[in-house]
Image (cartoon, rainbow over all chains, first blue to last red; front, side, top):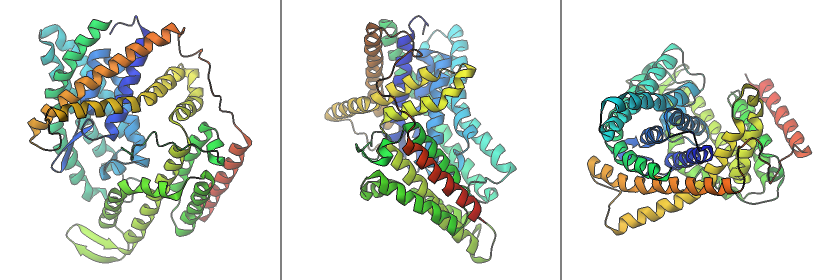
Amino acid sequence: MPKKNNTLRLNLLAMFIAIIILQTSIPLIGYIPIGPLSITIIPATVVIATVLLGTVDGAIIGGVWGVITFIRAYIWPTSPLATIVFVNPIVSVFPRIMIGLVAGWAYMALQKRIKRQSLSVSIAAILGSLTNTILVLGLIYVFYKAKAPQLYQINMEKLLPYLIGVVGTNGIPEAIFSGVVTPLIAVPLSRVIKRRT
Amino acid sequence: MTNFLFGRYLPGNSWIHQMSPQSKLLLSFYFVIVIFFANNLVSYGVLALLIIVVILLSGVSITFFLKGIRPLIWLIIFTVGLQILFSSGGTILWQWGPFSITNLSLINGGFIFIRFLLIIMISTVLTLTTTPLAIADGVQTILKPLKRVHFPVDTLALMLSIALRFVPTLMDEMETILNAQRSRGVDFGSGSLTHRVKAAVPLLVPLFTGAINHAENLSTAMEARGFTDSEHRSKYRIYRWQLKDTLSWIVFLVAGGLVLYLRK
């Protein structure tokens, strides 16, 4: 997205934030429950923002998602996991910013080599989604292995395998989902945006 | 969609309604931090008393608060259960494999339950008595010091208020899209993974396209009205620090001091 129109960029970012707020609160468009797991669509949204608006804006949208997760972990938790894991701003915000950055860099690099836009978007989406899972898992491990969380006096030694199991089993279907769905949405939208600007 | 975090605002003219949004936001943060310092019955009692006074002052019927807790009750029970089963220390009352219940874990579980209730209550007071736009305004005031390091506070606040303004609009549009797809026979609730993925795409593409249309129309409208940058924007409503804010802060600070004094 060229920087020529600042107002449009501001409004597009605002709309993406609105969509993220919607997706964090409404099932169906935010997350798809499959059995005991629930796959979130939001990484796909972040990658779509990255592809349409650029790497920096994608990182901003990812960061907004992270901040919403962080605040909601206190006042309106989405899952029991969130109350333990996402109360730490580094675990909740940092990986989400990285989704935008990694997907953006991957997309830029791939665009030069691969002609088909959908394929490069798909790979960027898979990488972005995996970045989220790996960073969240890694940071949980780093933070809670070292010392027990002060917030809840839970014995983390016993809980850690459970946490990693839940996040890991969510992560793989999430990556597949992002890889399939993101190009299906991003490619027609990039045509819409190109037509308008 | 009634359990939505934003847009639960109830108009009113109470003490809490009249406070400036920035001090309401900061007081909520402060209250949440103080909650984590409380660790015995007396200190939790002080905070519970304070929140009851706040709820009474807000002039909002207590049923709204109970409604706010209902969707979260299973989550709270699960977390408390986790806390009881996995914490260690104290005399063991019951043990099975990795799970054990001790007298200390039962007490901690009870405290976690109260803690949850208190945090949900204070955030419910905040969202019931403050409009989303006022919250965006409060965020802007609070983040103002970051301007020194060239953080685009005003742009962020403008973006946030536009986003909050369009959340209900996009929600309505989503409803329309959902009904349109349902009328064509799409089943959203069930099916295999591929089926659900296939159902999600025709929902999201129109939603995003609609959002892009809104962004475009809005930016045309804004530029037509002479919008150049968000820094030199004037405000329709100005929220000033009032005597009510100072008095509330004094009460909250005293309560915080009491908690620190009474904790073990």
